[in-house]
Length: 251
Image (tube, rainbow, N blue to C red; front, side, top):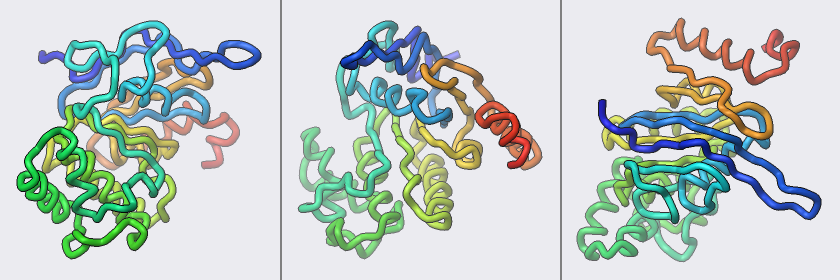
């Protein structure tokens, strides 16, 4: 069996406050295999986004280790690209193509090669004809497509997505979920995805990690079945884990 792309070993993350330290994530450990789509779900405040920030290298755990291909993560890097939920995560003074090419230019990729790869990704995310458009002229869904394309341009080892579709309308959100799966099939990236939506977790993920209420601890790790009946049963199980008992009975 090959070594995991990502491994968390006893990770605890605390923040100082004026009154007392607050533990966001406590003694968390799990692995993510090559090409896997692992979705993190849990109640608000359980440390999902904090955990993603630690994997990205934006913050360091107080205890434990985050390992990428067996090497401790100590800082951000192009091997881990992040897509946030905000629409305005693009550089407003750059065109669609220039936004996508930007991480390549930072990495020292030649202008011509960066432009070629950006043009390919523009087509792959369905934005052909909008190469020269600027972010303020795009819809929310189009901006998110650009953000995903920009992240994929760097050919990261791990794609990190923090509730990327939360602010989209229902139809656009479903379309973007399907587009993400199509891009995963084409590019074969490894995905770590945060959501509050049980339905989205089952649709996007190949496994679902359930975090407990604050502080975030591993509550369950569940495989996503391929058949519709199995997926429906998993959604019911997740509702039972995540919602108060009386509320789950009504959903």
